[in-house]
Length: 239
Image 1 (tube, rainbow, N blue to C red):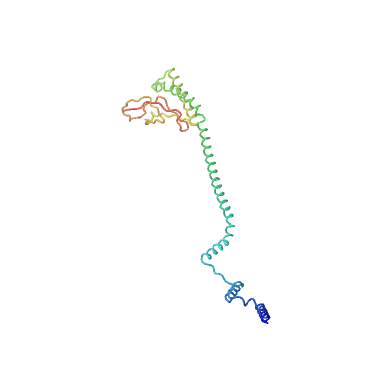
Image 2 (image 1 turned 90 degrees about the vertical axis):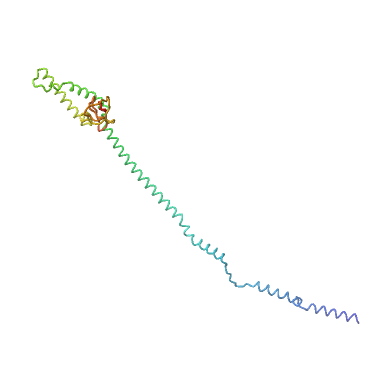
């Protein structure tokens, strides 16, 4: 009897345990934790606020996005600036070329004129000796014979020869002057010694003459278009 009673009690206890829900076996603190986890797991529409550094970073990114169109225009501006510089450089080169060409024209013109003016320089040097000989022949005739009132036959011939040579010399000098060749005598006007035009062969004191004054000319000088072809040789006065 006792054994049967114990067996029945044990079967009733086991049936009661089976019928108890598993949720009732959990402790109250575990139930609260599970509820909190469920609450966090739900999708909540929350709003996030950026901090100050994050806001500045966002503004910088926004500025970068805004400056992208200007960055796209930079190559065009750079190309335009490069073209402007190229135009300025080409304009400067053109002006320099024009200036060089004009200088070349002027220099060529001067060279041609100089060649034209001094083309007869070599011929003039060879002709100067003949002019000197003609001048010496005229100076060999004394003035007394030319001014004599009574002239014999021979004296008249001498005067005629002198006049003919004088006329030849005048015509020759006028012809040479047309081509730029001129003769000068510094002793005629008592010029001061000029080393660029005169050549001193002798120096001696002279009464009534200033120092370094040309008082006698041995050979007259010649100029070809203003340039000294041959310096005049003469005597100078010295104190």
